[in-house]
Image 1 (tube, one colour):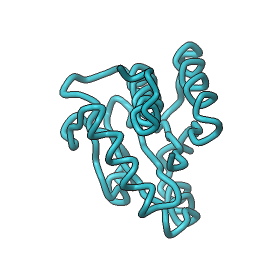
Image 2 (spheres, one colour):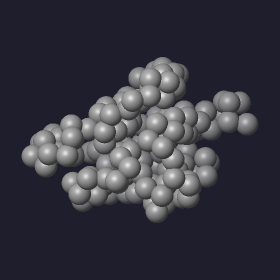
Image 3 (spheres, helix red, strand yellow):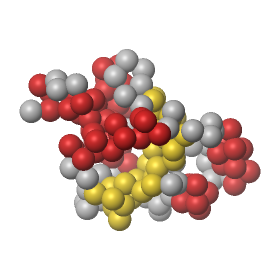
Image 4 (cartoon, one colour):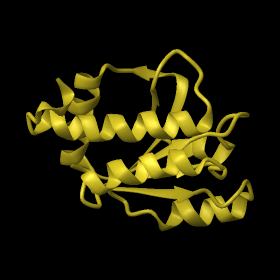
Length: 143
């Protein structure tokens, strides 16, 4: 499983959502981590992006992004594992992603055509990453 960092463009105020994320991260043995974005100050954002390894992929989540079912999502993560060392997935705030994230993201994915609250998107994304690992290893979780 590709090492994945989920970045919240804001702060999760829901301890239960973070608890669920941490549970899926535990099941993935450290391949999944959570980080909070350092605000909308452009210089801090640029410093962050300049510190990323060259072999990292930045993805933004948006309702208008590429839509995938769970099997296609698992396949995409597997393909990315061959190309990149690390994956950074940004979950935007209610007003969307910062301009810097939009400019730096090489891919944009959608969890659904529905709009989810911030913390629900965090749970759905972490569960789908876990499910992708289960699909790949033919674990019965996904059936």
